Image (cartoon, rainbow, N blue to C red; front, side, top):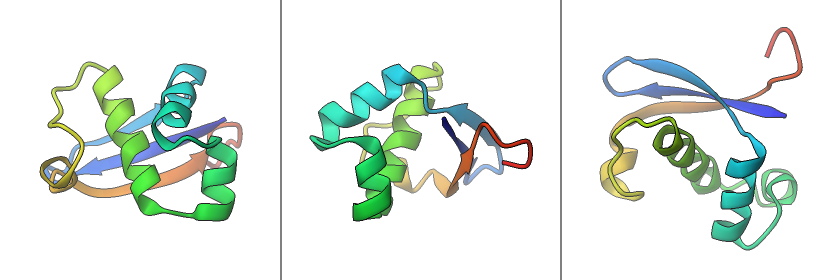
Length: 86
Protein backbone atom coordinates (compact mmCIF):
# COMPACT_ATOMS: atom_id res chain seq x y z
CA UNK A 1 0.00 0.00 0.00
CA UNK A 2 1.18 3.50 -0.71
CA UNK A 3 0.65 6.70 1.18
CA UNK A 4 0.76 10.30 0.14
CA UNK A 5 2.47 13.03 2.11
CA UNK A 6 0.66 16.19 1.11
CA UNK A 7 2.10 19.62 1.87
CA UNK A 8 -0.29 22.48 1.35
CA UNK A 9 0.63 26.08 0.58
CA UNK A 10 -0.38 26.97 4.16
CA UNK A 11 2.48 24.77 5.41
CA UNK A 12 0.09 22.10 6.72
CA UNK A 13 1.39 18.60 6.09
CA UNK A 14 -0.73 15.44 6.20
CA UNK A 15 -0.32 11.74 5.43
CA UNK A 16 -2.99 9.69 3.69
CA UNK A 17 -3.12 5.99 2.88
CA UNK A 18 -4.30 5.14 -0.61
CA UNK A 19 -6.99 2.74 0.54
CA UNK A 20 -8.99 0.40 -1.70
CA UNK A 21 -11.86 2.90 -2.03
CA UNK A 22 -9.44 5.62 -3.16
CA UNK A 23 -7.75 3.22 -5.57
CA UNK A 24 -11.17 2.26 -6.96
CA UNK A 25 -12.10 5.93 -7.39
CA UNK A 26 -8.80 6.53 -9.20
CA UNK A 27 -9.38 3.63 -11.58
CA UNK A 28 -12.84 4.98 -12.42
CA UNK A 29 -11.35 8.46 -12.99
CA UNK A 30 -8.28 7.40 -14.97
CA UNK A 31 -9.75 4.33 -16.72
CA UNK A 32 -6.64 2.31 -15.83
CA UNK A 33 -5.11 0.56 -12.86
CA UNK A 34 -3.20 2.59 -10.28
CA UNK A 35 -0.06 0.42 -10.43
CA UNK A 36 0.11 0.71 -14.22
CA UNK A 37 -0.48 4.47 -14.08
CA UNK A 38 2.32 5.02 -11.57
CA UNK A 39 4.76 2.60 -13.22
CA UNK A 40 4.19 3.32 -16.90
CA UNK A 41 2.48 6.67 -17.32
CA UNK A 42 4.23 8.55 -14.51
CA UNK A 43 1.86 11.54 -14.81
CA UNK A 44 1.99 13.95 -11.91
CA UNK A 45 -1.61 14.84 -12.65
CA UNK A 46 -2.54 11.33 -11.46
CA UNK A 47 -0.69 11.91 -8.17
CA UNK A 48 -2.38 15.28 -7.69
CA UNK A 49 -5.78 13.70 -8.35
CA UNK A 50 -5.03 11.06 -5.70
CA UNK A 51 -4.09 13.85 -3.28
CA UNK A 52 -7.35 15.64 -4.05
CA UNK A 53 -9.36 12.46 -3.49
CA UNK A 54 -7.53 11.69 -0.23
CA UNK A 55 -8.16 15.19 1.11
CA UNK A 56 -11.77 15.17 -0.08
CA UNK A 57 -12.49 11.83 1.58
CA UNK A 58 -10.80 12.98 4.80
CA UNK A 59 -13.47 15.66 5.15
CA UNK A 60 -11.17 18.56 4.37
CA UNK A 61 -12.89 21.30 2.45
CA UNK A 62 -11.21 21.18 -0.95
CA UNK A 63 -11.81 23.09 -4.13
CA UNK A 64 -12.90 21.18 -7.23
CA UNK A 65 -10.00 19.39 -8.90
CA UNK A 66 -8.16 21.74 -11.25
CA UNK A 67 -6.01 24.86 -11.13
CA UNK A 68 -7.67 26.30 -8.02
CA UNK A 69 -7.01 23.11 -6.06
CA UNK A 70 -3.46 22.71 -7.39
CA UNK A 71 -2.61 26.24 -6.25
CA UNK A 72 -3.28 25.08 -2.66
CA UNK A 73 -0.47 22.48 -2.86
CA UNK A 74 3.25 22.81 -2.36
CA UNK A 75 4.15 19.15 -2.87
CA UNK A 76 2.80 15.61 -2.92
CA UNK A 77 5.19 12.77 -2.16
CA UNK A 78 4.42 9.10 -2.74
CA UNK A 79 5.81 6.71 -0.12
CA UNK A 80 5.53 3.02 0.63
CA UNK A 81 3.23 2.74 3.65
CA UNK A 82 4.52 -0.76 4.44
CA UNK A 83 8.10 0.39 4.94
CA UNK A 84 9.10 1.74 8.36
CA UNK A 85 11.09 4.50 6.62
CA UNK A 86 8.38 5.46 4.11
